[in-house]
Image: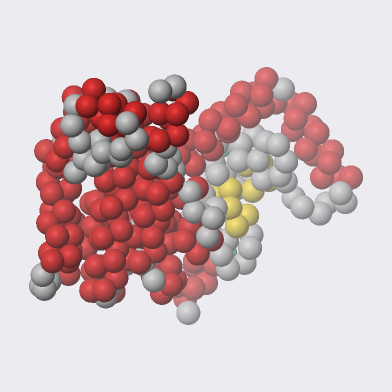
Length: 297
Ligand SMILES: [Zn+2]
Ligand SMILES: [Zn+2]
């Protein structure tokens, strides 16, 4: 049998299916109200949502484990020894695929993907919950359920990023679902961290450029302000040196032009008055005067 033939047979689309199941699980667990509240608590989720959420997440997770194995060696996802599997496939049969225990064992031996003791405990607990949902009447405390599912979601996200180089939030075309994903704590923390790092890299690059031509750049900014007839003042108060030197317009926005300060800050808009203030755009917040005003009400 040629290589090409064997690849056709082994192409099971594990990754697409796995991600699909994970997305479906998330969709089941979190409803539209969850997106509005931006958080979930154990009792917000119905037992039926828990059930379908867990079933999908678990199936998806197993597929993702197999995807990782097949990247190492495609035959590893089938029961039996590699030689036997190859033989079966070449004679036109499709061997059975491995179960969770076999997948975990082979991941350790092959691509050396080793889950920690705590992670294995989460996987086993969720497996147990899934089996209960599938086979008998279910009675459990929702808080325990929620804790375990949160940990499981965190573990799946980590596995996707580290082992399969996938960001789950970029895998969904549905905007609604993307919003749901952003409200999952552990995933959101990772996204935010990446965004901060990106911002930091970008601003450090601009700061270097700014420092090299500081005087020219400031002159240019002031000139532009005059030609605009004083509309759009290009500076605001810097939270680090308290001078009105923080650039808020153009290429160097976020950089304090005070040569003794040169601090950098992300810029966003106040959620009430729309004025420029420091902070990341994804954190909804109010400027000092609006906060003061609201406190007085
Ligand atoms: Zn400053
Ligand atoms: Zn404001």
